[in-house]
Length: 85
Image (cartoon, rainbow, N blue to C red; front, side, top):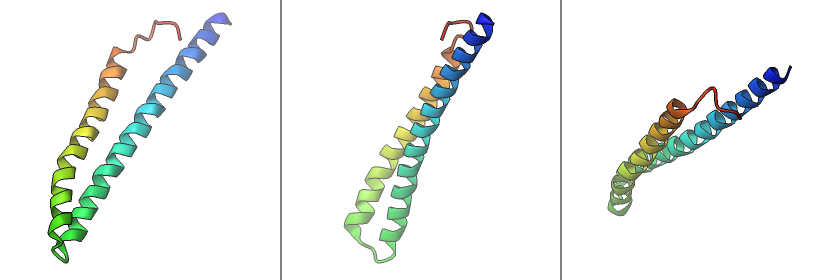
């Protein structure tokens, strides 16, 4: 029965980490989407300042999203299933 508790603890830890990674990924993806939408909306009336802002911000937000994605995958790969929770 003690083994089951250890397994349940480890499962809880892994699920918590997965949820944190999902939350961070979704937040960054949302930022990328917002900047893309802003850039598209700004091109309609050709608001140069907003077009410039979107062009500047989009690569930054895309890098943030890639970083979160890569970090989550790297953490998952480094997870030791035999390590106590």
